[in-house]
Image 1: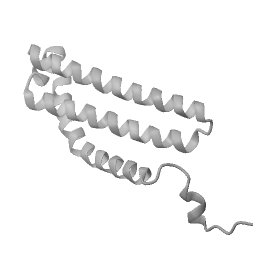
Image 2: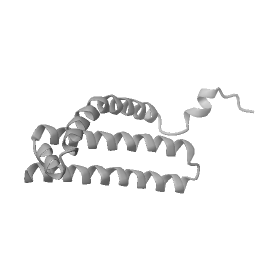
Image 3: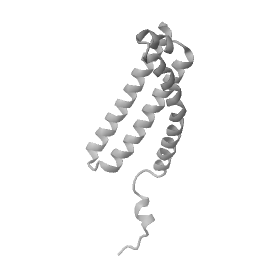
Image 4: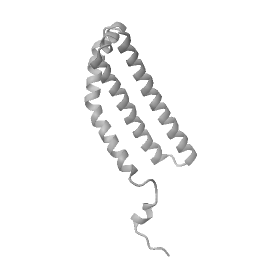
Length: 126
């Protein structure tokens, strides 16, 4: 009969210290998203009423383009971390979990890259 404390039972499960890192990064990205979302949505909302040309003119400015790039990068990173935690907590089959984690990362990086490339193209074409 083994006498183990709760701590020693869970000590060998998972990667040590990885959960705290995810928790901190998710908190930091959520705090960063508050001003980035506001700074992204205000010019986007103003330009949206003006149509395509207004959007091109708005994101042709370096400040607005930089804000959009930061917003897209941080939002996709935050999404990726959040979905990863949900998958790790609620998907129990190892093969399914690994597949979903890979697909989630691939989707997040593809979405961020496509958005950033689009903004950079607008910035340099305007």
